[in-house]
Length: 294
Image (cartoon, rainbow, N blue to C red; front, side):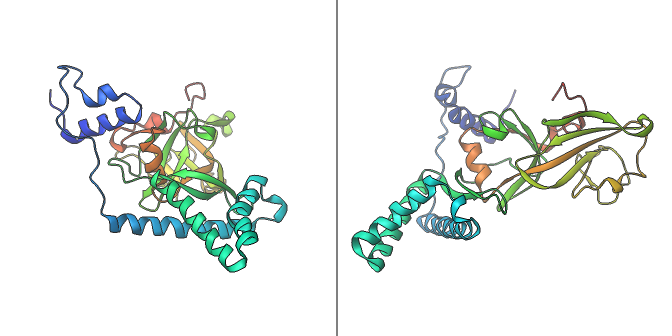
């Protein structure tokens, strides 16, 4: 049997992320140490400065949006205390102008410390429901692309034990829907011709998506090459009323999951996610109608 060098290197990095250092460094068959290094190539200083400047500006913009859009009473105590420590205390000690300069210097140091650890301060949520949080980010990961399945192996919160279908992935961010969170029991349409399953697609309540096997519905995108599995974004029930047929299945997904610039890459490198490449995804992986199997 033969193994691609790139595939072996990727597997070794996953072992390292999961804490399996011996498996990452030594062959499991002969016991010899691998000759190829796992270390990533050093990035040019100029590229790191440019990326940090982008992270810093995004942080400033995000905090501005957060404070301007949040009523004073809605800003949490830890956030208010942090802002007071970084800016309020220096202003009291050194005066307005010098205090602001000192505060910005401290703030820049905090952002830089988070940056070198692959973390940044982000504004999470959606308009009217913003909150501050820490998110991961990292260098691009080979294999991440549109059409893959994300499998939670270390993710927590709303993503614990989830499987997601990725509908968009680029350098700017990722959009995906959770496939295995039913919110309503499976039901059948009129005359038992069409089976429906209602799912929660993610923490952001941004539109409704529908995965189905009905050909001919306007606005449908084929998900799997050569397979009758489709996705409709901004789903409306009126779109499918005249298209139902015997044996049809529809997964109606409310909500979506979203990652920002290189955020998913950071979470993958920290061991939160595994993935299945698009070519390996089967129709039953995205259109499973038995809630007990999910």
